[in-house]
Image 1: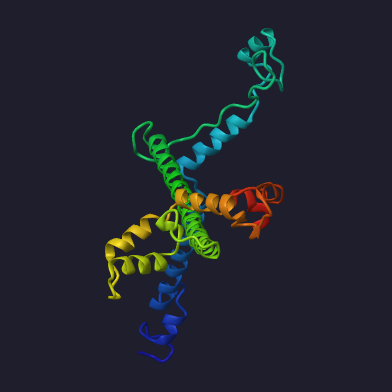
Image 2 (image 1 turned 180 degrees about the vertical axis):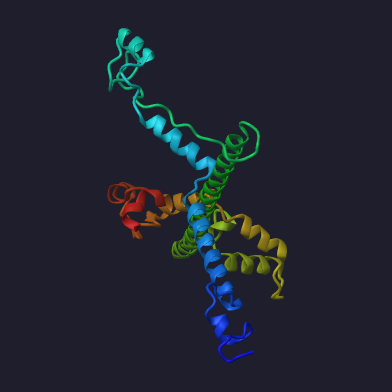
Length: 261
């Protein structure tokens, strides 16, 4: 073979070939085609809308579009007295726009969702009612505790003053045992029994505790007022009963609420 003849296997022949079929070039060309195809598919997918979205747009467009004057139904309404922009019927406060259509997205039966919503609302209202009742009960119980505590303080104060004023006027025995303090009554009973022990009886303690009540407090207050001309809340002693009535608003705490507070 002469030097002037080209070897078909030589590099020169392959390079000078009209169609370059090297593997790397073929791969790159196919890859570019595939990338362009994917890009086209992605764009088409993004632009495409679901059937539900298309239905929603069509429905909203139809509801927002007024009935044309050429419509037969509209003409019939005009003959019956309807005018565009006004509501139907005699009252002008009626609706002027169609009621919105609400499509159900769930799979539960008809009325199920509204029933569950009603049950939820009812349960919430019941919880609020119970919380309100508990709050009212707490307020009432707290008020009763304060009232009872105040009554006990007034009772012990009245006992002590009654005992002191009776001693000043040489009163030997109390009208009732609960008119004087517990310690004094216990000492008197021990002396009467000639009991020198210093032990307290649980029965006596229970008796003294049961005597602490509103009714007995009122009895001591009335005794102080009528026999000693003394007001527990004014902390004054009158010259006589008329003087006490004139300078004292009343015998009980409720009569002195403005002064005490």
